[in-house]
Image (cartoon, rainbow, N blue to C red):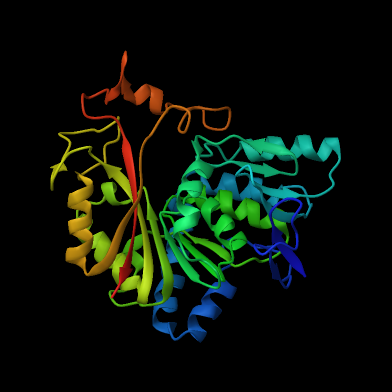
Length: 348
């Protein structure tokens, strides 16, 4: 048996045991996931997913993929067990020599930038751009995960999926079209040496059929403001859920009374693809108009340079470079600085 645990509590109520599967020896192997989906009656969707994943992982369409694949194959042949630690780190634990640890750190650096985390892989601490554990702490008490099947849209490298498994989720299916983040997840899965039910498909939410109704929980964090049609994104999330399924939505908001929306003229915090930033009241209205009910505001928090910053594992510009000089309440373009709201809702 293979276990997921919090440190020092391998038999506490959060522990979940998994039967080990064959060691992962090939990239982008989603056979277990596709088999599960077929058994659940989604064969037509699987056929579409297989074709889309094949196209997305074609090395001729991505200049860096061949190099990342070679780095993946060169990873040291070590295996460990997974821990979701109380300090927020997703860890793989096992005995390795100093030489192997040094080689592993060098290999992991080839997959920069690491944005979601933190991770601890055989003693190598990956200090990611985002303290994603802070977001997990805001979320974890407000989502029902025990024995649930979860869809995580815009999941990045699958960081939250590991915490969801540790919290009792039966299976997590992540979607992210950025191949570097998918490769980071593939690295972690290879180091585990066992197939745990946390997958990251190299696709966006446009792969979701209109009336999928396959998941008990759907999570969308940091995606809505990148969509030219936020309501269409919410409709896709609604359609992914089973009846009475739970949505977790996290997005940028503006601190404004009533139903208002900011549409940036050009960039927002140096981001080109930010379209609509609603007030909390407007966001609640969008959810209700889409068909959700039991809409609840879980958290509203201003993003700080302690939560999002440059590190040795993400050496590019980060939040401090996106804010106005001498005024952290405004972006460099003069808009209100990032504030993020997290809401939950249910499909009728």
